[in-house]
Length: 225
Image 1 (cartoon, rainbow, N blue to C red):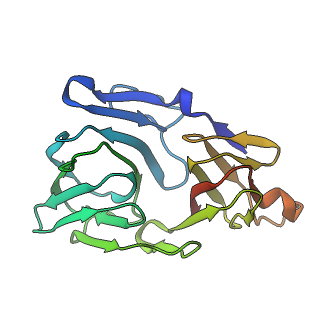
Image 2 (image 1 turned 90 degrees about the horizontal axis):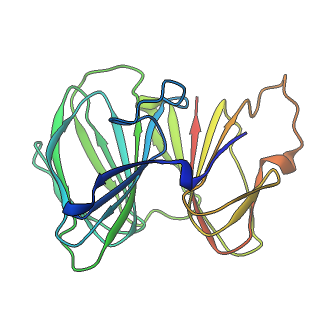
């Protein structure tokens, strides 16, 4: 298990434009050859947009983009004609495939916070697609077959436990609250990268795959091949 603290994220954005970004992986001018990806996950960005702020139209290609709104509302428009408002509890998935352009803005009156995760597809190219799952239920997995990945949302009451998936790569991002995993205390913005779960050559006590909520908590958990 490799724990990455919120304070070690690479800073980005543009404060004068009302944009604050924190990157978990090598991103833009923050090039780190030792932190390019974890499994198919190549970005986990915490974004904060002031009212009226946003990202003007920009391109993406060969990337599976999943967005989770923490607070506020995210307005999305893309070159394929989709125009939506994403709210807390919704899962937004944009498959950029051979290429798509989109706009992301905070058109609301309150600050917007969201987590955006990029995954590399197993096969590049194809036709872009877009999907929103409104109000996804707790523990309901969202599959990304194109990247060989599955997203699990975990909302925990204080003292509650949840088992992590058994997979070659598991990425745990703490959205809110405090949790304990394998003796490590994780707080908002912290992440844990686990490898080898489910490998018969690496025996493990099941309790080591459990996350315990020390306060009310919300987690995004990626199960990846």
